[in-house]
Length: 375
Image 1 (tube, rainbow, N blue to C red):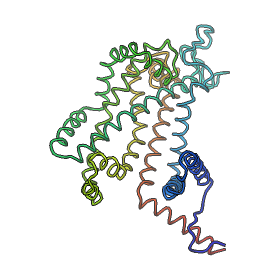
Image 2 (cartoon, rainbow, N blue to C red):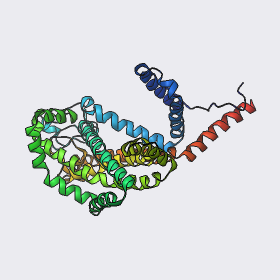
Image 3 (cartoon, rainbow, N blue to C red):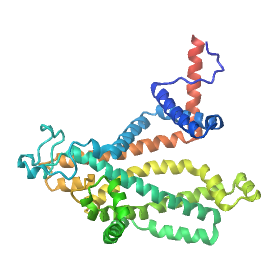
């Protein structure tokens, strides 16, 4: 029988699943770095508690499920699709032209080339996934670094970085992205043609055939344009948080110990402001997917036969509303992906708030104690 002073939590099925995943990852790291579990027991327990809080948020669980689906199909979509993205059945069988949903072999119908819409959506997940990963991976670190430098050093350095940031923020993000996406394709194509290694890398990332090498320039121009648009927001957020954190005692102590500004910024300040940044990143994944689809809809992104959700919607819009499924299904997929990232981001905002998370932990402990006491 458990005493009233127990530290155990009442666990749901999802709690046991998350515990198994975290323990499994810890065991793998333990084999590579012996002693890891013992040294980092508090961190491992803290991660478990964070998942306990997430598992009790219905919106967070739904968001996590949608995000996992997006990541899975973003990685494996082209390989589980029944037909390749560049297969045009209409040239072999004209009867495949705009088959409605539910047709034999085509559960979501076909487009004007007779291509299976479900296969196109699965292949398009890879395009959206890679672009969103690259934009976040390149734009966020740039904004974080500039924000840390501006907030920590202040003075002329801060003024210069923030005025440049203000220039970028003064333009609507979509307009600025359109401008760069229009100006960059030829330069990106030239870069790809001059670097065979880059060709192979991006063809593999987007799961494209070598025949699409000339179309890579438009995809890369969208990525570069969105990176240019994305970093200023992070620079401003990080700069504001750094201005607050650098006045704390632990920063003064680090300076007194003679630590370099780089170590202070990245080993002391950044870990203490990472929570809001992670929430912002999670919310931004959905925004990146929407903007990328918007640019492709405007004809600035992927070009046929490359599968892209925004381009599929544009092609289908020429035949809407008679061929409604070519617009509705890819549009609904974009909506679900953006919704998933936003639900997950909202839940992370609560989970990363220590007061909110501790209140959830207290309720879990108290409930276990009440059950034990009644027994």
